[in-house]
Image 1 (cartoon, rainbow, N blue to C red):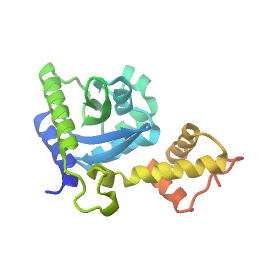
Image 2: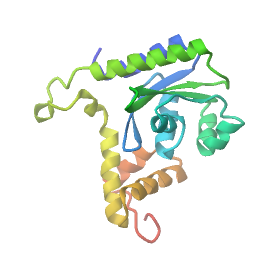
Image 3: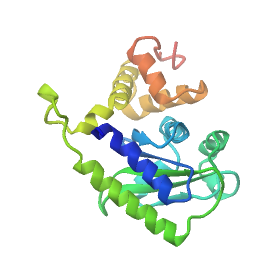
Length: 223
């Protein structure tokens, strides 16, 4: 098993140990989740929804450094807190999300996101198990080997090889900044807004910008 397979394997372990339907793991950089692995296509898709919106339980978990438990995305306070994400997630068959921060007491580097197809709480025992799995995930990710033969890139961690999509988002954001004359935050917001408006992911739109298939302009936001 290569290093790139380990995050998804650990997500599968989380699903086996906990009463959840699927799971994903992401690192977070400059407000964008970098998805490293998922136990299913459903988990990968809902994680991409959060990345595209820039909102959702995983974003809140990173900002707070604590577990965020969205127990019911069909009604109540969770819908009020993340209305657009709740609508998109339930449309994808997810009714509850439990986001566990990865890192330590001072630094949150990402999240383990647990998804369930029915609303409800995790028991205290389940929460303890989820925290243990998140701790194991953090240790495993940081202990994985460096790239085996990366030439001049040999000093970069192997995780950099899994962040190609993130690199494209960085590049696309820079291009939108130049096209619109705006700052980083505004450029990323424009990219996300365009992706959401057209029912696509931020990564898909970023690829089109980088490939010069899509250009934003000052008057209309895009061509």
